[in-house]
Image (cartoon, rainbow, N blue to C red):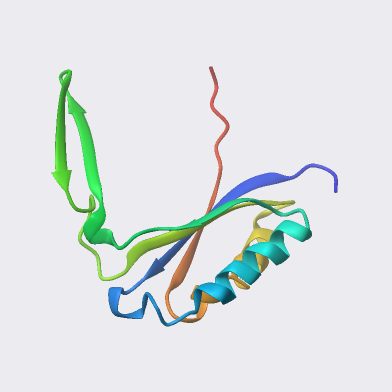
Amino acid sequence: MGTSMKYLCLVYMEPQKLHAVPDSECAACGAGMRSRGVLIAAEALQPVDTATTVRVRNGRVSVTDGPFAETKEQLAGFYLIEAKDLNEAIQTAAKIPPAREGSVEVRPVRELNP
């Protein structure tokens, strides 16, 4: 396959559309990606009202119930994939079933420089 990069595909959905795409369809999509060797990991997330946001400021930990940002669409899950370039990653992301009902943000993974 040559050199490949990792991309994180973040699935965003409006809360009322969270169940518009059957779990079985998302599972089948993940299985197909896994069989093609492009899927590293994929998970669906519990609804955003189960989120906890953690911050550390001046050594003090603060914990807030709920997501970091109030937005119409909420983070519903993710797929961590491998692709040769952004174009290939976008083509893969377009096949993620929730893209029909919400949106999929595609972000390149940045390697840490120790």
